[in-house]
Image (cartoon, rainbow, N blue to C red; front, side, top):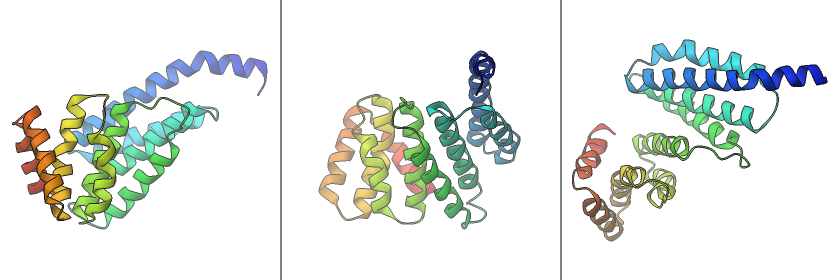
Length: 192
């Protein structure tokens, strides 16, 4: 890359990163609103923006996040077509591989990815794999709220695997932190 191209890219990169964040936020909002069809234009825009980026940890992060969003998209369609779970899982696995080790990936992004993968495995009745995704989340020292969010599904997976003493301890941790969160675990069980 020439010096001029390098300078131009360094001037444009903050704008590209801001656009990626804004488009990613819109995709997340559509996913959370249960409107996956609204994600497609944003996903295509993310692909276009990523193509403008040079190879770097930031590009790898953006590609990982895009894979996570595609996973969310396919996961949201899995109620109508269970075969979409396989597509979602493939995208989630790609996201985990693409997130660069040298870059401080947002704990929230990693938490969300782990929770979504755990939900996917739980729906497939692969409780050991779901537990594997949840284990690092319940030992998360970054955020008490994120840890609490993961404890309910973690306890359910332990119970499904017949590990009742460990499930009771997880529920005890959950109840001690916030009794209302036990309701979230019941909702998780009812939905998945």
